[in-house]
Image (cartoon, rainbow, N blue to C red):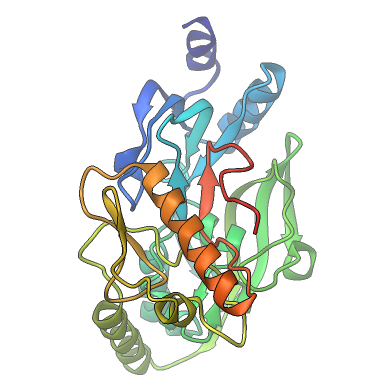
Length: 305
């Protein structure tokens, strides 16, 4: 493919054609990416962003592959993964600097080793820092943005840094522009006792393993919680716990998780999501909003209620 050859000559990182995406997704579901790129530098990222705009190609940034559902048809454009080129961690004067490709668990352990307190409860989030910042991921009373100082990103071909206030964080949401590419973030945390923090981390991981179906491929929480209520309770009350369509099932362990029982299709997940939304809406009048990002689908894949 001519466009692939052009991109190969343009950057120092790697370029793969027709790359299977299911192995990069915690759901283990999805088709292939026409072009899969792993930039090695900031310059690579800027060139890739310019390239996709010039060729009118969609661009998707793929982190740890959690909190996403990739279409069975895959993606026609370019998928970028930052784990190889942006995986550095640094600590100095109370500030932890972390690359977008670093996994949350690695960031938490690094912070604990440096006696930095405030992110230990986030260890079980199966995301890279880039993805966690983008969606303001959180659990057990903590959010990624809580101790965030600033975010480094590429916007319209330029490397910029935004303060926390500029990022527009709220519950499971941020105010980044659609074409922004997060490269890393800096966190300022107070000093803490590493042993106490390690115990908190272990306690939360143990609880997560007890109440969530970690033994089967899944995307994490499927729906946002319509506070003060919980999606899992609403779905369970609707009698849908354990309901199966094709190769996927609403987990008997936690009703806000859909699990891949093997050979699942993305369309099976969509069908189960639509069923849960309709049942809960008919029962309560509450509209469950997806937390999982739908990648490569038509806009009307989630049916209006």
